[in-house]
Image (cartoon, rainbow, N blue to C red):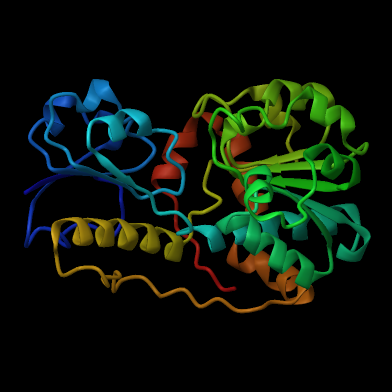
Length: 331
């Protein structure tokens, strides 16, 4: 059995080698000649998986160590008998930590308490559900929008226009597909309260960056249209800017790799379904009060310093991502 793996996926080297030939390559450089004789791929968002890469190969499984899958042509894969598996939920608490750092920064710099703010959450999946749980614990009034879940479950989520009119802060946690591209557009920004803050840590194309800039709404962005080529004007407009690392916690990365390994193990019958990297501390989720968050978050994650670094050197976007010192989850 032969596996092609993105060389930047942490904790993976040596795990699969007793059962497979594993070839590690930079994700953006994986090419058709590399995969033609491979049985499986373990990738990240740097590898575009479609007919141009996979046609004529013997690949039967793609495990992406990411929650998103917009880099994979899932329809082509399904039509050609290739199974696709994501690591959905792996980094939810890492993104929660990013949101917590942003909210603590906004409260400190703008002078408010959670009870004085309504938080709108667009997308209530793995990440959005955690943000809702902790935001309510911290004292925010929370309104949620998730049309697919509302259609399936009738759980009382709000229409996006209603959420926009009520929220002081809107945070996006949706996947990217044809239904979510430019969810946040000029029409939505016109419906928002003056001064309402936009947070995006989902996918860059969920927010129309040009319309956001023109609207004047303050924003905090972790993801960007046309990455890694950031719009200098939009970057300068942000309150905080980070290089697509909201979910880059040690535990999130460890879980992503473990979930990918488990997918391979189940598919090929390997004894690795319960594997977790010994180098990484296991997740230890716990409640945390707003006061504790505000007094401890900067010691665990200095988002302001990270933002200053990106704004000073935006051309280093990819380097910052590839050499990111994973932060540790502590709630």
